[in-house]
Amino acid sequence: MIASVNGRVAAVSPDGAVVEVGGVGLAVQCTPGTIARLTVGEQARLATSLVVREDSLTLYGFADDDERQLFELLQTANGVGPRLAQAVLAIHPPREVRRAVSMADVKALMQVPGIGRKGAERLILELRDRLGTTTTDTQLDGPPLPAGAAPLTPVAPWRDQLASALVGLGWSSREADTALTALAPVADEQQAATGRVDVAALLRQALQLLGRA
Image 1: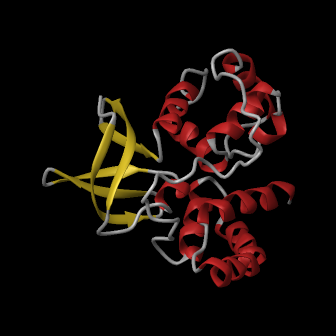
Image 2: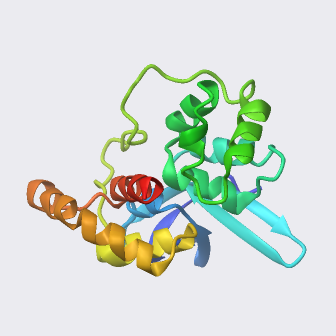
């Protein structure tokens, strides 16, 4: 198993990145939150999980080892494959997934495209004793960046990146456009205040908006 990759980021896209390791470019599938931490030309370390199928080898990348372990644990539940497990982590950071499962928060899990009420209840039933206790920390924006790491920086215009993420998670282009329009003022405020747009945070807000709609 390839547990991690560490190398120069050669390319990025809305659903993954290419990391050069020993002269070989490895294609890694990532959530928008992980992609937002990457910058082309800079060094990066990603925890990874290799999914082997008869006709493919797919490497999934994560911001840290905890996220990777949760990705693998989610797949032990009946009916959860790597794409659905990645979709869960695209919407909720690990501590929020643990909170939702431990507190039997069906609605939070149903925010993930592909998970209905029965699927959420099954996840809670099968994983409650395996995910561990939830943290008392109420900050749900994911783990802090390591010392010296670059801040969150969008690798593409935030509109393109967010639209691609929403469509990839099952929403239509029209629904994605609606969310983009609603969140444009938020993105402008982020850009003005910090010089960057936090695509991962916008994605969570977009999914909340679309879920209510």
